Length: 616
Ligand code: BGC
Image 1 (cartoon, rainbow, N blue to C red):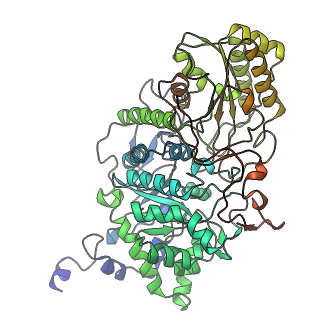
Image 2: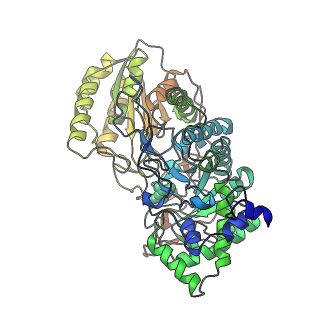
């Protein structure tokens, strides 16, 4: 009593028990902490307009970088959200920013390879190091929680976010995700495992009701979440947008309280996916502790509900306890707003991480076929390099998983660096076609990738290339990302006739000269390849390999790194072989209904099965 009098009676987080801190909060403060700041930075009381620090772009290193490198005090430009601060109780706001393939803020971060590629490495130590590297960038910039990894099961190759997920196999996804989370959290920042649960498609993701039976739900779709919670204790979990058997994931007491906390012992906090607009009262009751990024309407609804008795204040207190327990571990609390607490040299860190991105990318590429075509005989040799993706290699997908990277290395550049000579005719045609196509469309951004069509090559042109060059390398690429699923059409899941002809005609003309044709696949998940496999000599699944794409592909093509990747999901012979084909993205003609009728079925016919991958 006397002590309390001496210290002025107002409890402070960390010095007083969480119970006392909660007891000292007004109802408005409680609700504000349970709801994000609506992206309105003015609601973060400690945010000051002064620039916290501005990093100059180190000379020469980021030649192509055009973005914003400023971070502001109390917030990080480009972060997905922040929590409400209550300075009088010593509660700072914490900063949440996306992953999973690197930290997504407006400043330069490392674009690591897609998590599907990371899972293909099956190398938990390597995945841990990638997680740790992302964690270090978070500390540098002042981010507390990484909104990653995404571990929804790859139920269908058409899911737009497969590049952000890990596997169609629950054990692979669980193991890899646990390594990733342990890596991130090893440096004192938190991970947020998402999207809990059964958000395995983008089509109507906010409205679909997934019908799935208990065994399938637990043994397949919840398994990786269970493993990551038990093995890595993630600080936070993000609930999914969709309904599960009639109840929104974010309002689902069975999922968020009974299973997650009761059975698996989760002791962090749960947040909604962004702008999930369900009933805030039911979300709080179900154990969805924080509503992100938060709206004023949610705040008003919760306050009114407590006042008129529809919502017990003890529910809020329970959820606040979960949140405060995590805030106490966050750099924003421990370092009291100081960024770069480790005095890291940004340039050195990004250089080291670029090397790690290259190492990981090369390690996760999967060699699907090789008839004595790879590794390439050492340079100098000349290559007929075809496919727009060889000159404009994709590094990642679109959406919240996009990263503000400093640069990207495309395949043509990396092969040239290694001393290979590229046939100048395709090189020049592709470069000018890509430049023109990009110049007439909006600029590339996190949510938009300009479309570049594939070029047509006549047999006469190919014959000439086959005489002149030692080998033909063709890259086929596909873009995908958040907000939409891929389509069962030519140019997406199926090859276009231009692509098919390019591959078949190159095979015919180069084989006539006894020279091989190598196919590189630059995409987040599979396409239908069945008809062209017999015609090419080697196929390398290079995924979306991050900013060091070209270097990593070249490392594998030349054999300086032996391919070691194992498929985390199958390539199917025909789309009809995909077990969920008849129920993706909806069932029974109802766009909002998705029945997981395939149960635990394994595909009957695969072209390359899960776990497949050759080496030299
Ligand atoms: C995505 C999440 C992401 C969040 C914040 C949502 O649209 O589904 O995966 O973490 O936005 O950017």
